Amino acid sequence: MSIFVVDASIPIKWFFPEIHGDTAFRLLEGEQTLHAPDLIYSKFGNVLWKRFRKNQISTRDASATIEALLSVPLQVPSTQSLIPLALEIAYRTRRTVCDTLYVAVATVHQSLFVTADSRLYNVLKKGPFSAYLLW
Image (cartoon, rainbow, N blue to C red; front, side):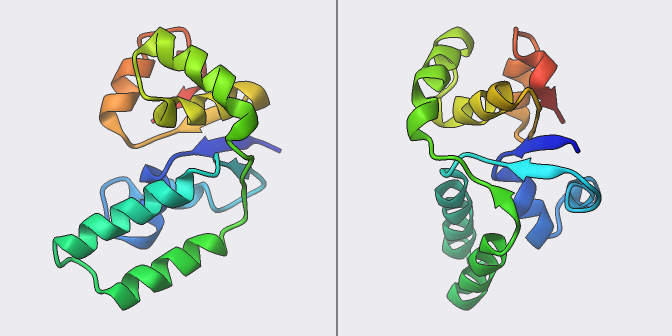
């Protein structure tokens, strides 16, 4: 069974029409297990809030979407034990701890981190964590 770590850019594609949405949906099919640090919910919530502020979704739609995400079978480890590793990765990559928590989960599980965040991807693909990275 494969393990993939997803950041908030992936489940957004499950609920809203976006480029590469079909690829993101494939992560929900098959035998793989999906992991994400617990901050995925606040990051996802921020995306919904931004869409609400831009009048792209209603509060009802945002609430329904967050409920739908909560029903997705994600393995969600606490960030508490991951912070030391994420901080080390942040120093090495010059990315935020929030971003590197996903890499920390992938490192711990020897799995791939899947992102559609182009800035994060472009930074990580040039460094020592590229082996854990998937666009």
